[in-house]
Image (cartoon, rainbow over all chains, first blue to last red; front, side):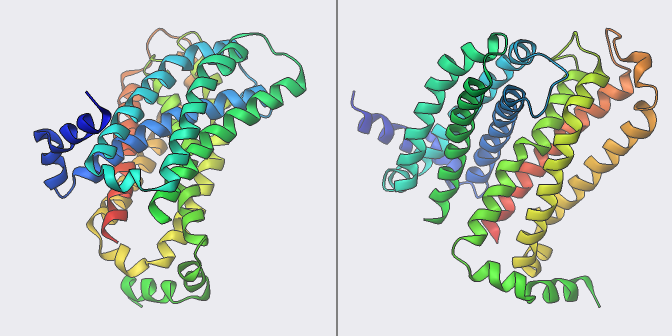
Length: 156
Length: 163
């Protein structure tokens, strides 16, 4: 089964058609997407501020990371699932959008980085200052880059 | 001057006109408004999760509040500033929009909800800080807070479709 077939099938499936025809379908799914990203980015911000030593210093990085990880993973799942629905509501628009391609590229990098480097660093005791700054820089740049690319889809 | 009159005046100020006419100012302000959710609302959500014992169970509630409150306040300052500017650019349309009004009402409710927490539960927080379960009232406030903020996000997103 090809990707194109799968997208076409989703596009014309009853549930997606129902959402597309409902006036508030797209805003509703977008609201779920935004709620998920709010929580996901919040965990990213907390861990990176702690990593940089500019905030959240009342708790150690491993404690913060272990407590926030499942919420970050849950929020990521929610954001990705709602994102897939937003995509199949109007695939041709997104496939033709440059910022959308950039967003997907950054998102892939951000996810891989998050579950490899970022996960390992935040679960261990603090390392050198410059290493921490470097790790936080990439994490913040990738995740907020995804956000800005997403906004650009609407405008450019 | 009526409220609508104020809206009309706001959107004809030079600032509002400049933002509306700039290619980059509006997307930049709107993007900042959305991404600052991670500081403002997101950190409130983390605090609510602690009160509901869904995260940071072993940490005193007061420690989590101390950790998050300054950044959350900074986040809300950014929201107020960027939200105010966005409103200025299309004040009249926003004023008449049902979802804008609903968002405003939910913001008010979220504010009152937080105020009740500050008055009723904040002063004696140390008494139940490390208790296995937070007082029922505090837990109700946490649940209401989550609902109000989800509502604010949904109304904010939906109003953008209609302006």
